[in-house]
Image 1 (cartoon, rainbow, N blue to C red):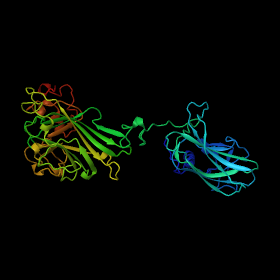
Image 2: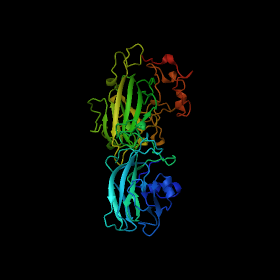
Image 3: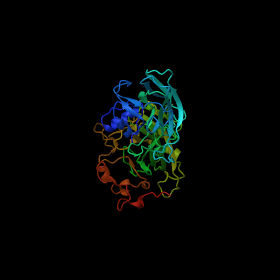
Length: 490
């Protein structure tokens, strides 16, 4: 059931919403006590009255004659709520001045799942008593009673019980505009109006522990992964704008993207885990990502980048690259620093050469999730690219992904490249072959100098169709791969 904050009055549009509205302020204006009872309010020897001594509107609550000191003789009891902080407030008056004494006792009732009663009410605790001054009068009194610290914001369900007491005479009490700060926690569909299950929320961020990926961290709540399970693969052919040997192993890495969100679904962090598996190039390539349409100013910090001192790379204090309209983060400036060669040409592309254990790189980009411009999941668009041989003007992106401000777009249309920015065709050959690809699973790659089209039999058909045909080209199905031409990782 949706929670209702008691300090908000809900407009009545149906039987149920009318009952809900009484939870915010018990005014008796419905004129029908059964509406409130249906929504878990309780009444003992107290009715609704439209007599002249009503306090506000057309109706008020009216007690029986207060001639009994018992706390169970005449009362009003709230539904189960999770009390907040603040004051319980109400208006009261007596209908005449005949009587020896008149008073009200405020109590809270805890939930006790082991109680014998079907209502599971524990022992009531008195926390405030209001007594009319004598001689009695009939003037309206404004009552304000602080919610006890023992129950305020405790996260546990309680009922507030108000007992009317007195001795002598015939005077009754009228009351109106009863307000109790807190969160409604009763279940009207239950025959005994038992409380809703109490949700454990250790960090008090509004997300239950069993749904919170970070139950002890109020700044984080959810994770979003791509791929959803396991890792994907990104690979590049670095001879763009020519196709070269087209072995697509000049840079090969497994990856997984993790977006961390807070309880309001605002982005706290972007984490990119990369496992560098192979370098089939002689070039000292760099690797970066552009966060399309995200300003560098929206980034708080970057950690995990593996870069050295180099003239071509300038980085701001928050870890983003200088001179860019959108946030760019250079993960490394030289792939061989990340995965050094153990000998021979390249790394992990020639079976005759020594094998190097793949190396993990964890990039963490932090954002201000509390600002007015805080990012949402839909705002995160990662645009990865290779920087060829540390030439900052020479970038290789995924097909149709835009270059950064620092790329030399004069290279478009040279060699085998058939890019046409005006037609939104980028980093593709005339027959739509790309120089960079991403797939949502870990796949093997060709040995050095082996054409990728010979290894993955349906890749060409997929590329030429711009991805509309043979979408499963990378899967390990019969006839899809030539495994003899693949590099076997140890």
